[in-house]
Image (cartoon, rainbow, N blue to C red; front, side, top):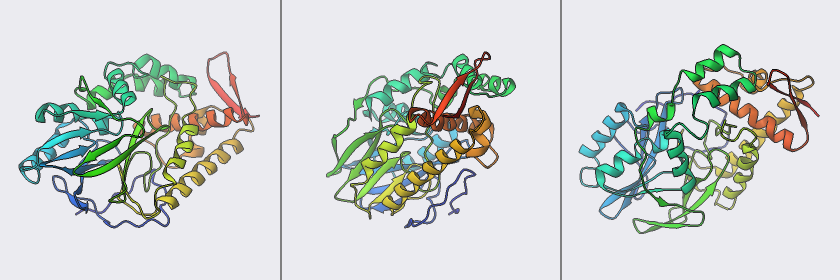
Length: 352
């Protein structure tokens, strides 16, 4: 097995225990708890993988998240169908949120096995909008968004050339679904998984906790090494997602400290409360650094090197701009920054 790859935006993970220091090989799984298996699929980005979870469910399995709808991922699924899952068909597809690496193969699996998609309602609706090029995914709104925050014209126009990136990774979206809601208890293989929904990264991100197994499927909301992307996007240009995200961390505090956390990226870990402490501290530091950099009016693009100290590719730059704007909006809502809109339409911020 290959060692866990280092991501250029990785943050330290002090105090965490990783029971499995290496991920599963493609097309194979690792048993992380009775009836719970870990598989990994490739992603065509610097963040080059997503973790998926197979939960024994009667004579088959429930799969949690699905990978992007590209040939390399589907080839690995075929390997699983011919091997480990030959006698265990998929009986349910459960998606934590609408992002392509999570929902990309959901409709393909639903159609192949004739099963239901389980998904939070807002996430299914966002997937439908994104697939149709709406919800901030149309090129013109995307370019305008980056211009507004000081991205140079040539770089902003480059985002137009990406087209509908969502549809490139999600060939189709299931036309119907069963809603996963806050407070639902989902019976899977004789166990009760408690669903709770959180915001900041996605509008209604589902997490699942099984008290019997003491296992949390955290999706993208709590990750062991990189920090969750929390961005302002064109569909909610004045949103405050960082407040939503930081508020969401309290939802995890009542869970036992020894909970086994199954994240969508990185390695499974124990040390949930330490990670929550770190994430809060990380954002407090970034907010402080942002304020310190605003003695004079600056754009979000100006501030990206302050918050992201490593080289970024074009894909990462879009996320970095969104995260920087999220920090600025959080501070603006607290009255600690002021927004100045110039005659050029560019938004600049300075310390209040």
